[in-house]
Length: 219
Image (cartoon, rainbow, N blue to C red; front, side):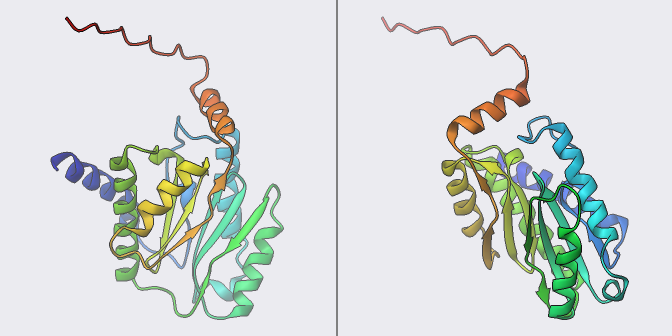
């Protein structure tokens, strides 16, 4: 119980720290807000490209939509998720079109909502939901939380990452059973078990694997 509390507290701290820097109409989210993980299944080059894509996407929002919009761009393995709120369908379509023009973008998932920009209270609730989902992924002991990107908008949880089918099921089940979550949008990139093992081995590099456990004989 104490471990779960500490895990949740740590996740909450990581989630809320960026909010202390102030609020702006257009927010570049996702990987740009964090530190590249040594256990990320993306190469370091792809991680850097994703961060650059998020920055570029934020700078390519048409000026006429910036004032009344709240927009997040999250790029993972060159697949871009757009979340937040814009005033109308025209703005939603225009922002997606500009994002698709960026070099290296493989796919765009436009999950923008139509309506007024969310309140600070709503965004705080979303950050708290983020922290709970991340903590529960850690506590599940079935999947590395480093392999899942959690993005919450208006209590809708979006899941990104490179995972196998089993990991995808675990992540979705954890997210949809987390209190406060209204809906789960699955944007996970599902690959085969051999692919995830290969990616994990590439991430670990040439590290020497730990020795096998010694056998135990009962007397």
